[in-house]
Image (tube, rainbow, N blue to C red):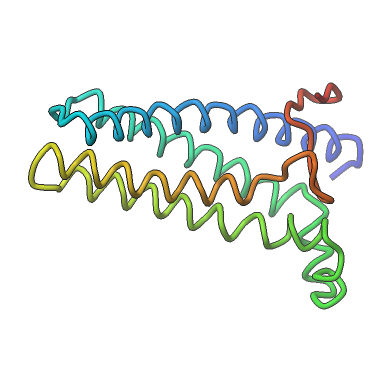
Length: 166
């Protein structure tokens, strides 16, 4: 692939991955608020509670697909890591984007899907809300751990839109 096209696609997928991150965060907040509110106030399980879980896991899946595209097609970090694993793991940026970002994110997605499935199958509304609150909380904590926050050595901007970063 021509280097200029490769660079454009890398910037495009980084931008899409960044923008989708915000949708994941919005729906994570929504699903957690609904789950904890329903659990603590003893509310009934509504269709909108299930929809919030669907949206959260759907945006996680979209984020995962964008991340896979970055990982296997455009990002330089995985190839650097697997070319020399020992040296790659000594470089904080290569280690983070080659492995340490990916593993918790994949686990978070699995946990979110398990939480959605378990909450849907729970016996009553209280159990549905409690199950959703616990499992979705674990997935959100894993996501927060694996985000490349700007203050970290391997940090990335909070907002990225092609060349514009904040």
